Image 1: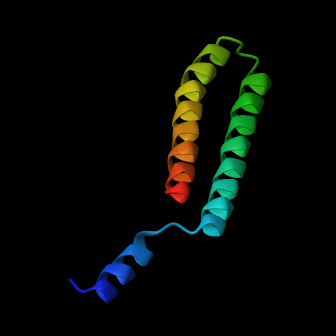
Image 2 (image 1 turned 90 degrees about the vertical axis):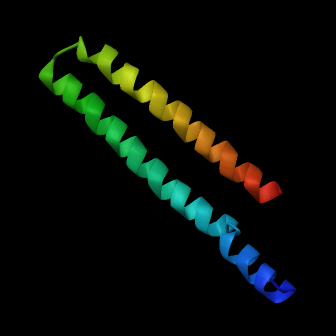
Length: 78
C-alpha cells in the first residue's frame, strides 16, 4: 500500500472531536431523559422496591458510559 492510500485509510478511521462531542452530548441527553422517565415511572406507580432494580440497571450503564467516554477521548490524544 502506498503512502497516499495509508493516509486515506488513516483519515477515514480517525475520529473528529467535534462530531464526537455532538454525538456524545445527544446520547447523554437521551440517557438523562431515560433516567428521568424511569424515575418518574417509579414515582407514579408508588412501588419503592423498584428503586433497587433501577439502581441495579443504571450502575452498569453508567460504568459503560464512563468507559466509552474515556476510551474515545484517549484516542483523540494519540
